[in-house]
Length: 175
Ligand code: IMP
Ligand code: MG
Image (cartoon, rainbow, N blue to C red; front, top):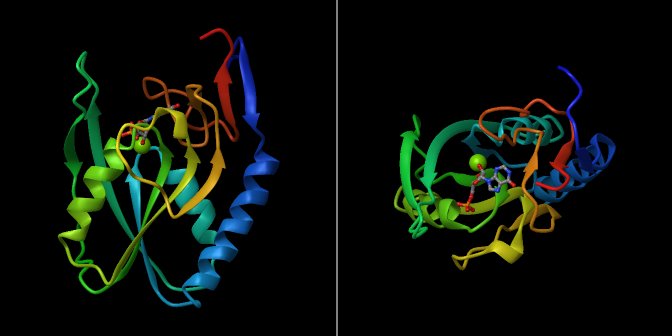
């Protein structure tokens, strides 16, 4: 990859690893080592889902959902399901694994949708949280880092499908 101009590191790979270690321990303790179903929200959460689950010595089932959100001029935030669940989560302990909570529209929609599938429990774990931007009243149960209102890339997060594979969280200065 050629050098990317004006790219600054917001959260280094080392800090990500440290915090994900802590989160994994916290979740593992809360669930007392029992089986958990992780629902990875594609595509942004793939790195986080993998890194978190590698650090948890318990049974984890993986499910994947892909949604697109349309933030038009009026920002009504219509969410479209692109890839739906394959398995049954009824009676399961489920955690939604998300890359970032921004306006909260995606997670508000997903939480209601997944509740209708009658899991035993349903929680949200997000690597990043941009609280300032919240439009919907929703909070993650587990948060890696609270970040300022900057558009971030890397570690799964993209701009037009690029930069997902950066090993850290970065942002463009003056953008
Ligand atoms: P929300 O529905 O507004 O909370 O937005 C959720 C989705 O928007 C996230 O899952 C991301 O895919 C995307 N998103 C929000 N903020 C950023 C960002 O700073 N960088 C990259 N993607 C973002
Ligand atoms: Mg996403």
